[in-house]
Amino acid sequence: MEVIISNLPEELEASSECIKIVAAAAKKVSMLYDVTESEVSITLTDNAHIHALNKKYRGIDRPTDVLSFAFSESEEPEVTGAEGETLGDIIISVERAREQAEEYGHSLRRELAFLTVHGMLHLLGYDHMEEQDRIEMEEEQRYIMEALGISREDDDTLPLGQAPASEKAQKAALSMEPVSEDHKSGFLAVIGRPNVGKSTLINTLIGQKIAIMSDKPQTTQTKILCILTEPDAQIVFLDTPGIHKPKHKLGEYMVKAAEGTLKEVDAILFVVDATEKMGPGERYILERLAATKRPVILVVNKIDKIEREQALPIIESYKDKYDFAGIVPVSAKDAVNLDSLLTEVKKYLPKGPAYYPADMVTDQPERLIVAELIREKVLELTRDEVPHAIAVETDEMTARSNGDMYIRATIFVERDSQKGIVIGAKGAMLRQIGALARQDIETLLGSRVFLDLWVKVKKDWRNRDGILHNLGFGNER
Image 1 (cartoon, one colour):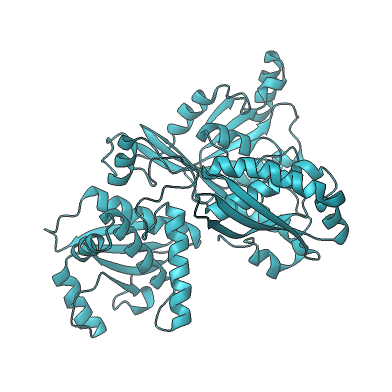
Image 2 (cartoon, one colour):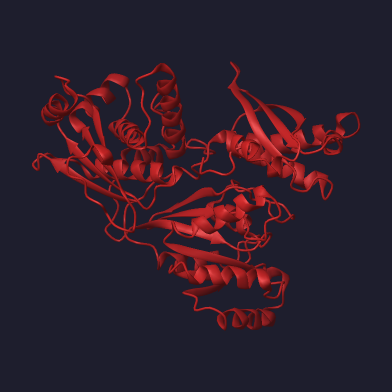
């Protein structure tokens, strides 16, 4: 998304920190609601100017914190052309935002992020005139703020999966200190056939388990955003489902999510398995990469499983089929040659500030990551008996007075026979799934966890649009 930020009046001083968080919040909304090809104009102003706009356009004789004018409301609309559409204009009073930040007891950075999100939702058609609409809009705001790693209510909330950082690191993250002119930041799609090690590669790079792993193909079902922050760059990885020939509606969604990601990024990592020859699946992906017009880096993974002299013929076979921006052999599992990969990646990132706080590692809510960790253990323990007829939904996460976390989650299967397999004799399999999942969840949350698992049957859920939507598939949510 193109975010155009200006000051009105021109002499109004808006710090680089204000501009960065406003741009980041607007772009986050555009990604979550699939309007990345659009344009929005955001004006940072003072109370006097927003007061005048309120009086002129809304009949309100006082300053407010934010105003939104959707494209259809504009008196002189400007069409951006084939690349996308103009969503509209947002006006934010930095003066009022500062007052409210002091009133609520949190940072200006958090207040500006919230007001930007609020304004963007208005442009997308959300409103709060009726009670039900208000409840829905507030829920959307909480969702987006969580995705940004920012809580309006609690200024001490840390981004997902992070133990408290050092005092210096926390202050740097909250203050968003200016970065050097050479700092780079950008989005990177990680694409490839199922089971080539995409999730392993990302987890190793960021140093924390976010994307789930399994020796079964098509383990990753949704697009997951993971963030690596280094002194000179911030790289936002989009871990995608493997591209394959779909056999059901879930498979169609997975492939659509993977291919759609290619339009949103600055560069692409095409990950291949060094132990397998190029086949129709790889050629299928290369055809789609050719249409993206993005730099593509070939990552030859699992070199720990082959002899050194075997790597060159593999590389040559791919070089003959595509003009790659770079080629890097790695072992994601053993962290071999990953520094060289990052060096290559940074060549193709645009200059710019970080989009996310320094200690944030994913935009995914804790509930989603918890559900994914449980699903990973089901895939691991049921082997081929219940392949991909598994979905998991986190129903409740409640912090207890002693600091422990109570989590209730439901495992969905398609048939009664699969339910019996997941539960096991006298509940043995379900207890084992819970024990292994709890270990990873406790590492993620940094607290003791009581995990309450249930198993339910949803007949043929992978081919039913309504159920897929409710489980978070088929949309960017």
